[in-house]
Every structure is written in structure tokens, then in C-alpha cells.
Amino acid sequence: MQHRWQIAISAGLLAGVWAGVADAFQLVTWIGFLSCSTFFAQTHSGLKGMLMAMSTNLSGVFWGWLIISGSSFFVSPMFGYIFTAIATSAMCLQASYQKLAFIPGAFIGCCITFAMAADIAAIIPPLLIGAVLGYSMSLLTGQLNNLTNKFQGAVTEQAADNS
Image 1: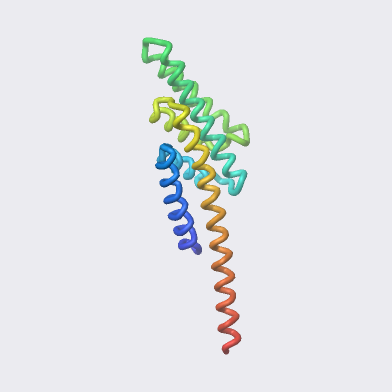
Image 2 (image 1 turned 30 degrees about the vertical axis):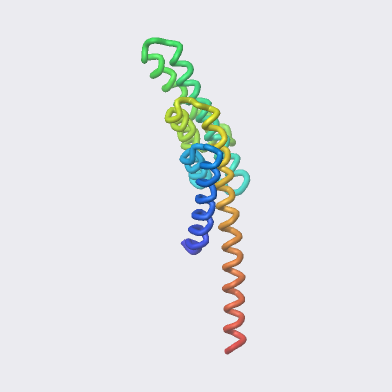
């Protein structure tokens, strides 16, 4: 990877900022990191990638909530299995809709919902901020790449002038 240092600087800096913000506002840090990872894992970049990460993760939160809520009305765990089967199929089928085409994002949102016992209020803010974090890391990396290229161009020009 040609720009490893720029990625390392932007990711490290913004991950540290996110950890501090999450701590200050009592947000669940790891949820933001999973959402940030969703941004980088799917194929779109920029604003479209951020929106894809948000929409697929949020759809997974919905499906996880539906599994937990729906199965809580029944005594038999069999209903939980049935809700899980239906929601899993739906998370795969929804990918035919372009804005929800990243299936792993839905599964990440669903798993977060299970891990957080469907505490939607604790899930949504860091989930959305995490996608913004990924987008911000991408933007900062691009800016650092531009600075590096300008610096390298200036050094190359200076070396040519001295020859």
C-alpha cells in the first residue's frame, strides 16, 4: 500500500478522538468502530459509502430488534429461531435494494443489537457517528496524500534544479 503512513496517521488520530468523544458522552466505543469498519468494508467511498454503512447497519439494528422483541412474546424458544430465520433471510433479500446492498453491514447491526440487548438508545448514536468517523478518516487520508504528493513534487523539482 503506497500511502500506509497517511492511513496510519488519519486512522490513529481520529480513532483517538473518537475514543475521547465516546468516553466524554458515554457512548459505546466499539459500536462506533464496527460502523467505521463497515464504511471501509463495503465498496462505495465518500458520502455514498457513509450512507451505505449507516443504512445497512441500521437495517440490521431493526432486524435484531424485531427478533428480540418478537420472540419475547412467546414462551417457547422455537419462536426465536423462527424470527431469526425470517430476519436472516430478509437481511439477505434486502440487498437487492441498492441502498441496502452490503449484507455484512446488516449482520453487523443485528449483532450489535443482540450484544446490546436491543438498547436502541445506546446503539444508534455511536453507530451513526462511526460511519461519519470512517468517512472522516477517508477524507483526512486523502488530504494527507495530497500534501505528501505536493511535498514529493517540490523535493523532486528542487533536486532537478540543483542538478
